[in-house]
Length: 126
Image (cartoon, rainbow, N blue to C red; front, side, top):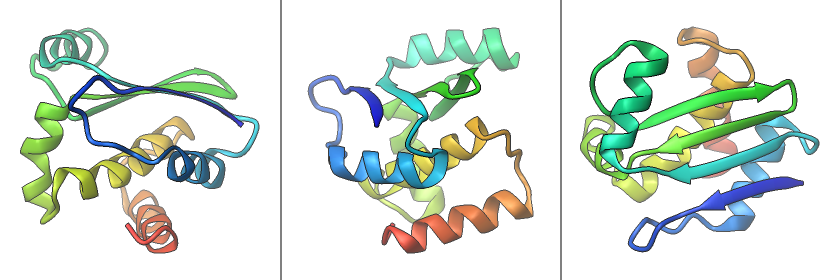
């Protein structure tokens, strides 16, 4: 399993074991995934550059190769978005991780993606 994870001080703790199980279930054991938390200013810059949206967002997913990708989180935006989903930030973060990994697999927003999100959330008690 290849999983690299950077979490600055003060970020919510995602148990490494949960991260690994989620990654393996959604992307497979041979997939190399990097996860990092970035500041709002950096997230806004990246969102503007890669999506043409001039605002910070809670998550960005970058497929780098067929078996390698990166997911970035902005905790300020995660905290803002969580109440919209009737969740706390620590509870919302694993859902977002699943969401981002499904994007890495090539899925786009729609019924199939939502169905898979529900299945993985149920499987991992999220």
